[in-house]
Image (cartoon, rainbow, N blue to C red; front, side, top):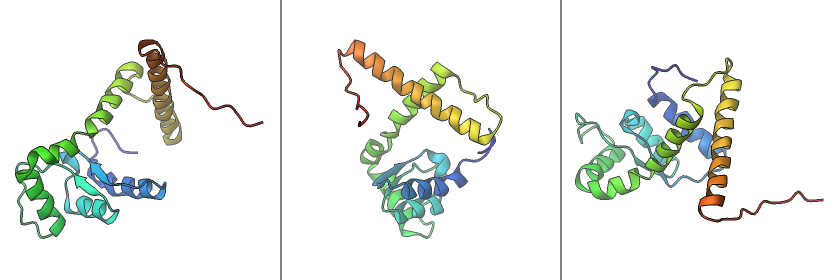
Length: 149
């Protein structure tokens, strides 16, 4: 866990490692400008994915690594294509905003374990709300798996 004012960038590589360890195959990784660094770009490529992280306005092409240069030129000269990949993360941001607006922005639990459980409970509650809303608005009947006897 980090404080409210902590820099997020150092958490990027451990998150990639945990995602890979959990068995997910990553093809693309999108993150906001706060995560742009040579280490984060290289870590993404090392996990077999393409990093879609926008560059800050003061970034330069000649930072010394191939992945930095390639992504820098992709970002600057094929911006529309780059942004089409990058903006897939807008769905995630929308979900975060929905959860925060429905269940509050802050976690009330004191310990780290309890905070993780509280956050996961908010995600579960959000997903249930989406299923219920879909049932009524889209006239969808969900099919739930039954327990094996």
